[in-house]
Length: 142
Image (cartoon, rainbow, N blue to C red; front, top):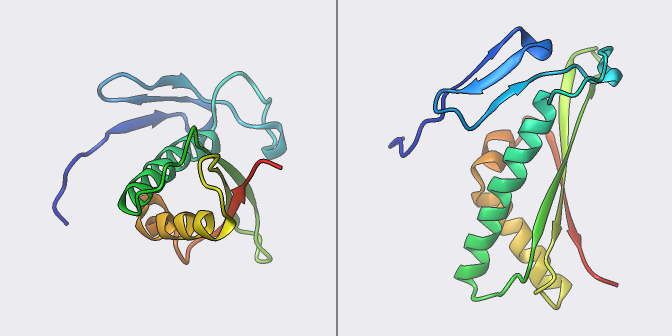
């Protein structure tokens, strides 16, 4: 792989600590969600950070494939719902639902094609493929 960019982030104290990027834009306290036995404090958690990153990356992939197909997405958005749970074996596991809202896309077939193609090229989708369940949803106005 030819490296184009490397981000460096350090977490101290695990889920109840602090996370900071080397260059400074992220400098945040971490809190354990109540659902995982924590206090549900004001800090962020790894699932929120992962969801933020995945939704942004997937949105860029959507923009790329839409441009390739000369489709205007309109004022689109991607929401990542990141869940953590236990497998049948008791191991912790992530699952993601990506809700893509494409108001500029008139027909379902085109929207689904773009979402599926974005899932093929998005680096986060490629990294999670065959590792966690990722559900793709196309959201439309009624």
